Image (cartoon, rainbow over all chains, first blue to last red; front, side):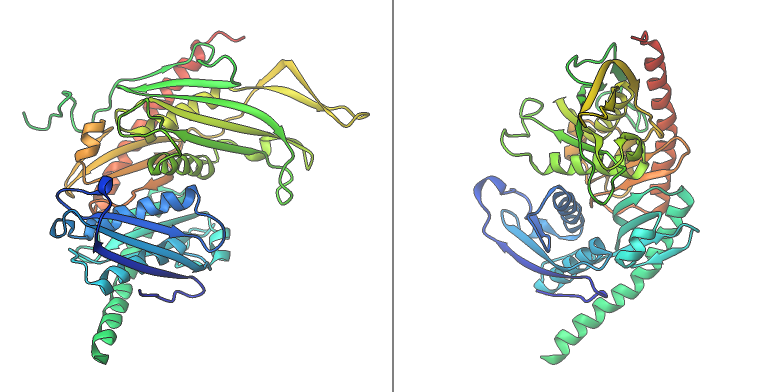
Length: 192
Length: 260
C-alpha cells in the first residue's frame, strides 16, 4: 500500500489482485475492477458510491485488464484525514497503489483540484477553507501519456472559459505530480 | 453507411424528447412530470412536507432527490437495495440542484428557525434505454416547474402551522439547468444521447450540465477514455445549444397548461 502526503489530506490505498473473482462478477475477457472508498467517519453513502464510480472508471481506462481475464482487482481507499482536495488525493493514492502493485498499466494518471475564487483566481490543491470560499471547484484526472482528461468532476458553476483555464492549469500541475511519482518509484528501487 | 447510428440518427442528433405535463401525471404529488427521451421513460414526483430547518442554516429548506432504477425498467437491475448506478445518479442530481442553484433554499423557508419546506423529489425510471442522467435532470426540472405549494401560516396562539390548500403558489425556479450526455468511443468518437446498446459498447461517458446563461453547472466524466480539452469544448458547445432547445420545450408545455 502507498500513502502520498498532500498537506493535511491523507488517504491510505490498498490494492489486491489480480486475484480470484466470485462467479457473478467474472468477466470473460478482462479483469473486473472494484473500488471501495471508506470515509473517515460513518458508513459509506451515496457520495462515496459516486466517487467509487469515478475512480473505477479512471482505473479501468489505464489498467490493461485484457492481460488478466476472469480475475478481480480490488482497490480499497481509506480516508485518514480530509483537509481539502480529497478526490484528487484519492486519485493519486489509487495510481500509486497501482504502480506499487505491478498491475500492467497503459498510462499513469494524477488528480488535480482547482478552486475558482470569487475574483476568478485559480487556486490549485485548495484547503477546506479555500474550497468553502470558492465559487466553483473542479477536479480533473489527467493522464500521463498526452495530458488528456480521464475524469472530471465539478462543484458550483463557472463559465466555460474559466473551466478551460482550470484545465490548462491542471495539465501543467500534472507534470509536478508525475515527477513526484517518479521520485517515489526511484526511492523504492534504490533501497533494494 | 458512414456517420450513422443503428437507429438512423446522426452522431450529434438527440432522440425525440417528449414531456407529458397536463396537470401533472401523479395527482397525489405536489408536482410531477413524465419525460421520454426516445424509449427512456422517467417520471418525477415531488412531495412537499414541513420540517424544522437545520440549526446551522435556520433560513433554508431542504431538497432531497432520489433516483430509482427499479428492476422493471431493465434486465440490468435486480430488486433490492439501490445499486451503484442509481446511487451515482442520485448524487449527480443532488449536485445539479446544488451547483445550479435552481431553487434557492431560502425560498423554501416559511418561518426562519421554525418551519421550512422539504421537497422530496423521487425520480423513477420506467423504461431504461440509455441516457438516464439527461432524462432524470429534465424530469426533475419539469416536475419542479409543476409544483404548487400551499401557503402556510403559523397560528400565533397555538404555535401550530396552518396549511391553506386553497391558496397555492408555484415554486420560484431561478435557473434551468439541462444535462447533455455523450458516449465516448476510443478517444475520438463522441455521440450524443446514447441508447442502452451504445452505452454498453462505449469506452466512456461525459455529461455536461449548462444553465440559461451558458454557464457550466457540472462537468461529469466518471473515468473512461481520455479526452482532450478541445473535445471537451465541443461537448460543451453542443450542450449549450441543447439547453436552449429544452428550455423552449419546457416553456411551450408550461404555457399550454390551463391555469387551475
